[in-house]
Image (tube, rainbow, N blue to C red; front, side, top):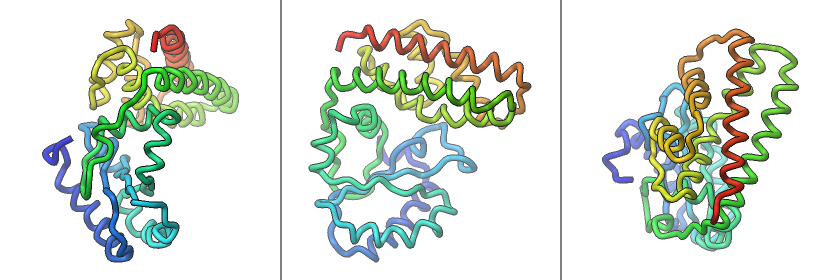
Length: 245
């Protein structure tokens, strides 16, 4: 994404953090990126974190010692703990984390150094396997969360809301797997997913809206939402399982 897609306020907050990191760590970095929702229209300053990736030329635990004392101060400003990688780690991990690296390729703003994510290649076979695995894990997690809620409206609501952030990167991966360039913003991701799979994505839209508005739903409404949410996830699993990589 271009610099024009990054809000100046977000950039200023991140630059303050980056300046302190660079002041404390004198070794040259390979590159630094802002990633995730901070680059989309879905960023909510009251709820969303500013995520980042620092790529070191080689792993150096001293870098962690520089970062750790900054966490409390900058965490209050919305800076999440950054991901730390090296070029070698990225090269060796594309087959293991294709969903994550696809989303880094799609959704990152380079702040410093050489753009290592722009030209990475995501293999369809690796992506299909991870999508299938993630969806099956989500189904298990949803069942367990429903049981743990024990009929408690608040607990069930919190469990459903907590699950939705990880769905959007997965949806982008499924869209890519099905042969289309994934959109960036949540509403467009869900619309494209529906277009390609014909699955009703209304439950995912409802959970995103519930998360943003902090609305209070009755136990009956939550139970119905959970069932639609679960069934849509299950259908996506069937489609992904049948996809030809």
